[in-house]
Length: 309
Image 1 (cartoon, rainbow, N blue to C red):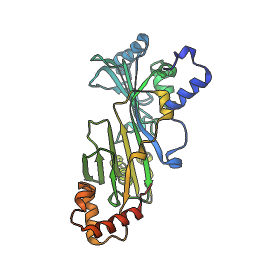
Image 2: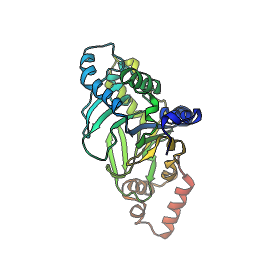
Image 3: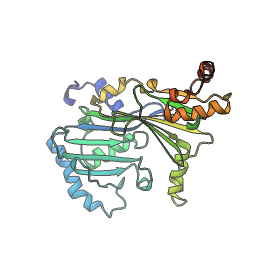
Image 4: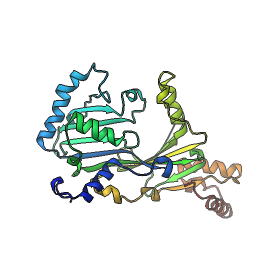
């Protein structure tokens, strides 16, 4: 348990600040990023009152104020009485996938919840904006008030360049539920929607193209650069957590549990069709038509092909 913020020394404060702001190498440098983080904290009553006051009194006055940073507006969360959403910048309120949104809610409707909830995407919502504009300017809440927060969910993302979902198969220990969706590219889901862990694999390049298309030419400054090569995004969503902010610094890498198998280039047409079936039905069923020798040859090619990461 961390001590109260009043007794933290400089090293402890720096450690907690690093965990909150997620500083470090960029996605391009290490290809691994935090895609969203959910935190819950019991704030002092006067700080909870500031959030309520901001939602009830300040937001209505800001409704037609185009100069308000982040274009904050009211949010009606299911589990809390008061909430609001803000954006990294005024321009980004038009961003179609909502990746830049910062969410804040207070006043739990049911017992068992901490009195304040926040969630945002550290890769999209700059930490200086969250700390300076949201917490300091709008709410007058110091960032060290979040030191005793618990993390209830964290989404981790890994980008694999020059890789396509169609050429890989994926598996996770004791996870049998698999769902595939097709729109602008294929998206694969491993694990139940309500489960503690869910893996999403999709064509990141196609998602960027779709997002840019939705923005149109008028919002071209918001367009994200489209990679020249294929780009596969793997997201691991860890939900139902209860860990302190400082524990993020020692969080083990969950990607080591994900098994990824590349489609061998020397597969015959039959072997390739079996690989396609394995993506949906599993290895055992896909290879059930092979005799012993064929199954060994098939397995040998798979091992030689390895994984993309």
